Image (cartoon, rainbow, N blue to C red; front, side, top):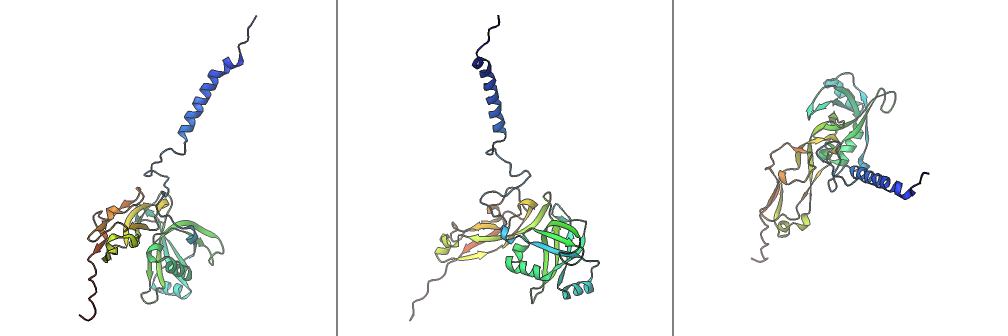
Length: 264
């Protein structure tokens, strides 16, 4: 006669092995597992500036058959800005060049709203349409970085612009604007010293997915005679500084002479 063993005796070892395997699998996919910020895919780190979604905009363009001074003048008269779209390889201009024209009003609005330096450190979606802007066949839709923009010296009207395609795999050379904060708490400025700005942008080689819109420079602990260097900037570790780390970006100098009493 066969004797049946209790069910608990048969299943307990199996349950133990099951729970051990489940715990090991959970440890492998734990959300608290460390992620290497130097390896793709890249993402913005907490506490670092990231682009504000409210400024996202699609730049609309149409193809341009040829280049030259007369062609450019004709485009500007029609309310368009001559532009070029390049590929990019490790921060350098590459091939696959496309001649396009973009709307002058749209570029002027973006430059005026963001500021020239901030416009040149922000990624946009560029759509190239076969006919009038937003009409006909969509030839190309690509993420781009405005690399250069030439403005009229007197009116600030955009004269021409260069875009770089910016897929996730691309490294982009960017002059990132600096934003100075903490002036009110600076010991040196509270003593009446002067704040001297030496650099307003700093050049970095940036992965396209984590291009910083700006870099914050904290002045809250800066006293008279002290300075901040490029090495002091807090940026994503995947960004590569392309200038000397010992270059100063700002300092606190001198102090205001006390006002002489009236009558002397």
